[in-house]
Amino acid sequence: MSEGLAVLAQYLMPKQALTVLAGRFASAHAGRMTTSVIRWFVGRYGVNMAEAANPDIASYASFNEFFTRPLKPDARQPANADYICPEDGAISQFGAVDRDQIFQAKGHCYSTTALVGGDAVLASQFENGHFATLYLSPKDYHRIHMPCTGRLMRMIHVPGDLFSVNPVTARGVPGLFARNERVVCVFEGEQGPFVLVLVGATIVGSMATVWHGVVNPPRPGRLREWRYEDRQFLFRQGEEMGRFLLGSTVVMLFPGGALKFNAEWVPQRSIRMGEKMGDRPA
Image (cartoon, rainbow, N blue to C red):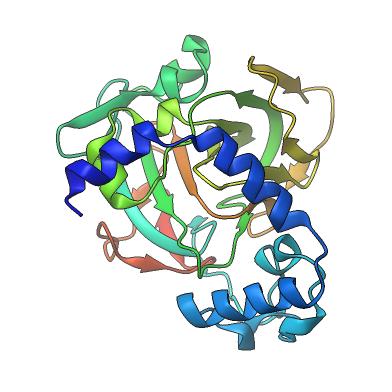
């Protein structure tokens, strides 16, 4: 199938209904059927169960339990760096924010304001800043960790579409990451504010954070916000902050002058949680 037809199919398919059905199946305790699906999934996508804290496929009661499996304590060793990669996956894009524009793919950009749910004041803090878009494939570890130490300030659930976030769709759907459903997590760090945006996608049943639990569902169709300025939610570099129930993408924003990316980073390169993402400029 051509890329154009694959993108057209994304517009036509009942994405919300498929996602709801997938979420129900993924959370179901279906005994042998669940085990059979997990076994097929591991073989189909080459999931490395040797690094899982629990490598026994038959012991997972639901697909979600398997999909959000923790790793062995020594499976990822955080690098000695100011900023580390928050997840396993691949680098979709990264670089400088051009005034308020984030590069998505050739011919496509979107604004920081749109990404964070329309809050122009929040977005202005990342004008001419830095961004990184990281894609999680089905085989990847799906827990998200802190790239640097930060204090949680706000969380915003932004309703939206549920397009796939694979590279083909990123090349074909304008403003993809700012039109899909997403959870915007705002932190304050040593170098100023930074944002981690968990972007939903087709079949992504829900997203969760460690301080709130499952954020979606519910999906009320309106923007929801939680504020934590009066709480002391401090997360150290490398600590878990959230997870996807089925996979998707994380977009990060940092202010100008806060980050110099690792020279080894290039688009489409595979990455592992804990490896060096960059350092503060000298």
